[in-house]
Length: 176
Image 1 (tube, rainbow, N blue to C red):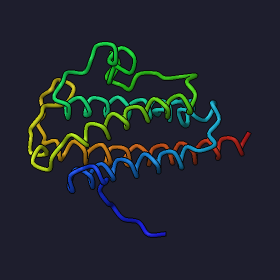
Image 2 (image 1 turned 180 degrees about the horizontal axis):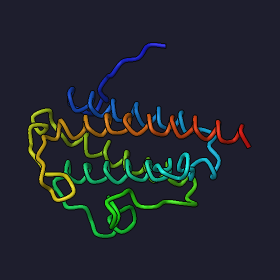
Image 3 (image 1 turned 30 degrees about the horizontal axis):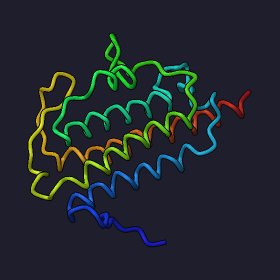
């Protein structure tokens, strides 16, 4: 199998390559979570000390949703904030997510990626130089180029956590 990052036909070259990286990582997320039971999706690691796969997917979805709206140059609508947020809870941790099916989480995430695709078709490579604010208090600045790259990188980062949770879950299941 040949791996390559190729832009989408209806996107400018650099935008398409960056979008392709996000899309490929979402496909990888689907593969690594395939076949997870609800118990495993909600599993928080040894002694319940870590974020569950459900929490991590919802976090990725919400971060990416925020980036989509930055790309659009619009504030995130309140209805979407309420549906998918908050970013962190009152203890500065990822909000608890339990009992939401993997299929529902991934379907919601797919909707965000569809919005990203649609937004990327409107961008030119020059638009990638636009600087936006982000962070919990909008205290950081980045270009849209970095933001789309970050979506791909951030997904890979948390996929490593999901892989570790899966390993622990299997080990825990075998020892019972």
